[in-house]
Image (cartoon, rainbow, N blue to C red; front, top):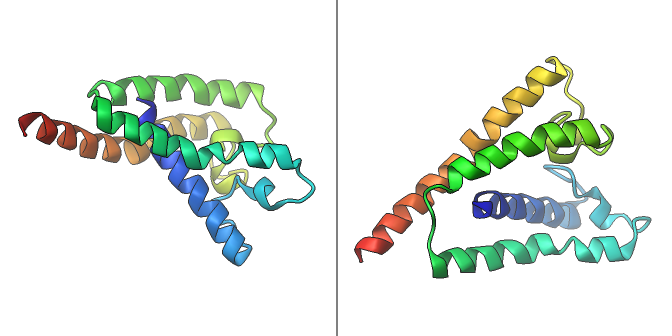
Length: 144
């Protein structure tokens, strides 16, 4: 189930850091600390797990197979973690975009309505497409 999240978060994180490293612009946001010399170097080095984890998780899924229950469980985990992130982290950090997309506070909706929409969008827009591909791949793998 974590493959649904790890693959995309790792790809977006890598894209954001890579583009910022080349151009100085963070197209997605959330990785500004990686190029900030004022941020502890150890934290920046440890954040490189975003590069390694998708590779390791992808290899594990290739070797062990994909479980079709992943979408359901990853969605439930998201529905648990987004409200907890909203309640227990500082709005300035905007972890998981619970206060607005691309690292900026949203102004167009009530904060709880925005959180509800975010909880619906993540599974539909991020997890579902990869789940469909992985489900197709798993079926194809089992028939070969």
